[in-house]
Image (cartoon, rainbow, N blue to C red; front, side, top):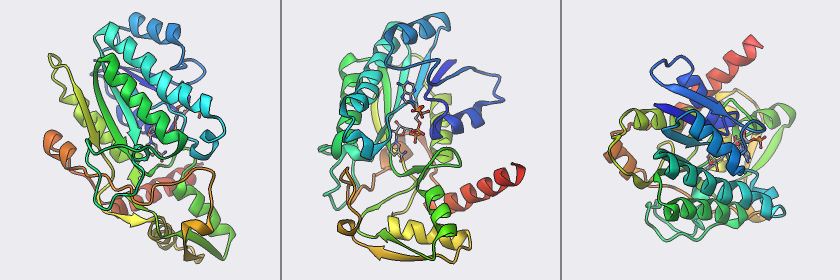
Length: 292
Ligand SMILES: NC(=O)c1ccc[n+]([C@@H]2O[C@H](COP(=O)([O-])OP(=O)(O)OC[C@H]3O[C@@H](n4cnc5c(N)ncnc54)[C@H](OP(=O)(O)O)[C@@H]3O)[C@@H](O)[C@H]2O)c1
């Protein structure tokens, strides 16, 4: 397969690069800004045509949730319009688009894990822009798989785990919200799931599917922070606080647990528990800082 990965220097893109780096069975094309802007139709079409792309994995996104509240047009441009450009290119090339989306398509007022076809009610500008990206792909009608995920972290880029490690070294005590509950996702696990699914694609089939993927288990941000401090042997005390004590420009879903039954049953995936994956990520981080 000729596989194009967009947004390839982000967290998920970097994990896919790790997995596919030595894979000689596929022709892998990793692109990020500035060499490939997913909102640039001419650039995207040229890459798809010249390299005969058969699968696009879209890891490109505007992920700055709070900044999106003020930079609405920019967030929509990448998350909605960029997804539409890729979908049109995929359709023209007869390629499959695997697009990654978010738990923020739900408002978080639910009290049981969200199913793929539950009513959406996007949370904030980021959630709305990602939802409209999903809908653009569906209406363009290319072969597609949409995977919604939550609380992504990795050794790459900035994320909650790395922020907690930094604060844990700098401070004696921090407050973290205990009234927002969800499931962390190690980007390396999601990348493995994506590779496993793509290995088993039926080339004759037109896909039009949405799935949920996160690590197994459920926790609050407070629980997650406490687990990070404990695992890293940091003495910083984590105090539970309420969301109202930590106002942010963008509202966060209070309950964003995703039901993963569909992806597990249809693709036979075994998903690690978030705590096991956290320990593995921290090990990887230590190894890479040892090398640096
Ligand atoms: N992070 C999370 O907690 C989270 C949670 C749920 C779902 N998701 C979804 O999971 C996917 C992967 O997230 P991630 O955390 O890996 O994202 P990320 O680390 O922010 O990476 C996104 C990448 O896309 C690039 N990009 C931005 N605009 C682009 C454009 N117009 N054309 C091409 N590339 C562009 C970014 O470049 P710059 O850095 O230069 O902007 C960055 O390298 C996204 O779809 C995201 O919405 C993420």
